[in-house]
Image (cartoon, rainbow, N blue to C red; front, side):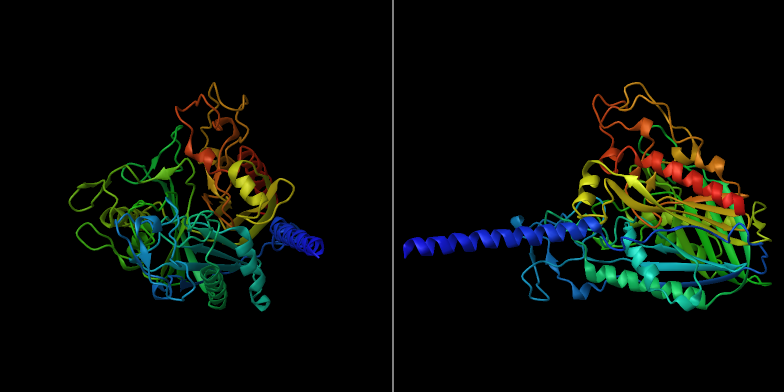
Length: 525
């Protein structure tokens, strides 16, 4: 009898372990496969055989509030005031939904384990639609740290097909004081855990903004302006070689035949992280003040008049990395140099940038885009991944979908008349676009620079700019000849970029695919 019971017990244990192993392998298999496995883009519109017959450009805009309702989340008592939830130090919380765990709004960037305590300004997703010569393109900018490609595919797949949208390009602003939409900064460790309810809300907001922007298309005129903004007081490159994409690119869209603004569009590169890790309030950082300044004006003295309409700010090239931390930003009125990570510094940076944009759009450098034909090219790419991010993808913990050592991502080229826009699916080092790649003695790969010629040299619009964190976030995208993970380090210490990159093949792969897509676009446009 005892032997029989022992046998049955062992049988049940073995069966249970087998069931658990099967379930675990099935779950891992789903993660490795990833959603939308068959989704793949490879097109240029209009087709090369189509005759471009541009009429009057049509433009529409819309936005949606994506600020989380903090009343639906747990409040907490931060006993030592360090803005980190640390149960072991005595931090407690109010369990709103009675599920026995702390459900906070985890703030992205800097440290994990950083729950929001309040809201400083509202967070948004903003969309602008362009239509001409039978092509409709929508560009979306999201107040987010970054969003993986499968979420954007989900939104594209949900759009009303009757609207005739040819393509939607999404971009995240990489703000470091917003909810974690990547699952990298949550609590507890292991921290690959997204707030699915919030992500669903962001996706729905994106869908609504896109569809509304297209439904509100109206005839428009377009003014373009671009300058090289000197970095002093605006941005610094925190890793040698010091290479900054200084392009400040601005568009103004007006109702056709009038001076009434529909929208202003700005693209410039800098991490929105002015407040650093000590800030417990949700905020769009300097992006908020930039948008307010261009929409409503910057107060006197030494301010500027706003344009009205809606301002859409798109993130530029911020790898390297581009930051305003540990540098001074001048107050425009007192000329005091603001060094501390405060909202006053964020406001000064945003308003100074708004004044530069407003002045540029009203200057002799501004010109009308008189033949604004619309074209778009999109290509799914597969980037070889290695290191920690590579393992995270392989295990389905981040950026789900494993393609035999590679991750799926995307490159876009958008043309609006004489304006050409190229996208990068992460934080691209500016030297891949601008030039200035180094190959110093002692580097990990004894090769000459391979990401040549620089991408800007291959673009042929009268005005060219690049949008980062577009349609994806695959981390830092470095030139391979600058990869410096192994000691002794060329630049004195293990660089930050390599620790947050998908590996040394990302830069060359992206450069090759972007160059090829530009060439295909130029065959049409």
